[in-house]
Amino acid sequence: MSVKIFVPNDATALALGAEAVARAIAAEAKQRGIEIELIRNGSRGLFWLEPLVEVASPNGRVAYGPVTAADVNNLFDAGFVSGNAHPLAQGDIADSAWFKQQDRLTFARVGITDPLSVEDYIAHGGYRGLERALTLASADIVKEVTDSGLRGRGGAAFPAGIKWKTVYDASAPDASKSTTSASIQKYIVCNADEGDSGTFSDRMLMEGDPLCLVEGMTIAGIAVGATRGYIYLRSEYPHAQRALNAAIANAYKAGYLGANVRGSGKRFDLEVRLGAGAYICGEETSLLDSLEGKRGQVRFKPPLPAIKGLFAQPTVINNVITLASVPIILDKGGAYYRDYGIGRSRGTLPLQLAGNLKRTGLVEKAFGLTLRELLYDYGGGSLSGRPIRAVQVGGPLGAYMPESQFDTVVDYEAFAAIGAMLGHGGIVAFDDTVDMAEQARYAMEFCAIESCGKCTPCRIGSTRGVEVIDRIRAGIERDKNVETLNDLCNTMRFGSLCALGGLTPDPVVSALKYFAEDFA
Image (cartoon, rainbow, N blue to C red):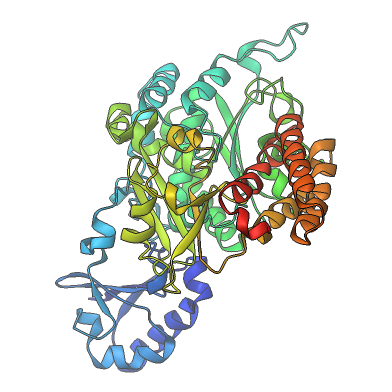
C-alpha cells in the first residue's frame, strides 16, 4: 500500500521551496523503492512552518516543517513515512494549540484534501450544501443566507442576503421594453481581485479548496436565477488560476456544472477571467467595466449592480470568502452559522497575520476575539522582538491602530466606532522602528498611483496629499500644512466617488492623531 505524503502547492509554500521539496521526496522514494502517493494540497496556514510536509501514518497525520530539499534524505533515514520522530516533526497540526482553538468553517478542508479532486471534496463534506439547495425553492435558499447573518467579507460588510434578494426580485432593467423577468440573463460575479496589502485568504481558498468557491457560486446562481458566473481573478495569481480552471473542468465532468446540474434541470456555467493589475478593479463597478472589456472606472450609483450590473443585467457580486461561506450555511443551516460571532458580526472571519510577527499565516475565528489575542496568542508578538507599535487592519486604506486600541474586539461595529475597519481581515504589524509619517505618505502615494482618475478629489487630492506631507516632514509651516492636510482629507472622504479616495484619509488621519511625533 502506498503512503500518502502531502506537500503544499500553495503560492506561499512554493515561494519557500515546496516544489523542490516535492521533487526531492518523489526522487528519494523512487530510489528507495518506497511506493508513495504525493498529494499537492493547500496550506494549513502556518506560514512560519512552510514548506510543511504531512504524512498519513498508521498513527494519524504527522507534520514536518519547515522542510528543505536538503532535509529529505535525512527524513527518509528517520522513517518519516511511518510518522517517526524527527527534529522537524510537529505532530498532528489539528492538535496543535495554534490550530485547534480556531473555528475552521470556510477553511475546513484547506490543507487537508486534494484541491482538485471532486471525490475527495465530497468525502470531506463538499457539495452537501448544493445537494440541499437543489431540494429547496430559490426564495428559501435566499432566506437561509439572510438568516445566517452573512455579510460581505470583501470590506464593505453589506448583508449578503439583502443583495441576493434584490437580484432574485429583479425584473427587466428597462420597463419600457416587453422583456419579462423570466427572460433576464442574471449573473454571479466573484470578486477575486484580492489586492489589499497583508491579505491572502482568497488566494489560499482558491488554491487550497477551489471547489468550495465553485459550489458557493453554483448555489448563488440557483438561488437568484442566474445561469452564468464569472470569477474575476487578479493576474498576479497564476497558481490560483490553474487551480480554478482545473477544478471547474472537473466539476463539469462530474455534473456539478453545466446545462443540467446534478440532473436538476437547472443550468449554471462558470469561467475565470483575468484582470490586468489595477487595484481600482477591486471596486465592484470598476470590476464590471473591466469584465465587459472596458477600462476599469468607477460607475455612478444608482443604479446598483444588483439592478443593473454586468452587461446592464441584475448581478450578484460577492468576494471569494463570502461565496465560499455559502456551502456550509446551506449544509448546516443558517442558524448554525449565525451561532458563531457576536452582535451583527455573525459567523467566522479568516484573519490574515502579516508584517512584523513571529507566526504569520491564516487564523479563522468567530467574531469576538481581540486584536491583542491575534497579535500575541496567534502571531507570537513581533519577529524582531521589539514592541509592536502600530497595526494596520483592512489593507492600505485601513487606519493605523496604536497599542492603546489592541483590546478592540474583532467586530465590524467595534472597529467602525474607533474610526477603523476590518475590511478583508488583513492585519499588518509594525514594531517601534516604523516611521508613521512615511506610512501616511505612502497611503497618499498609493492612492495617486491607483486612482482611476474619474473623480477630482481622488485623482488630484492624493497627489496634493503627498506634497503636503512632504512639506510637513520638511518642517515647512508645519501647523498650517497639518491644517491643510486635514481639510484635504475631508474633501477626499466626502467628495470621492468610491472607497479608494474616500478611505485613503483614514491611514493619514490616524497616523497624524496617534503618532504626531513622527511628523515633527
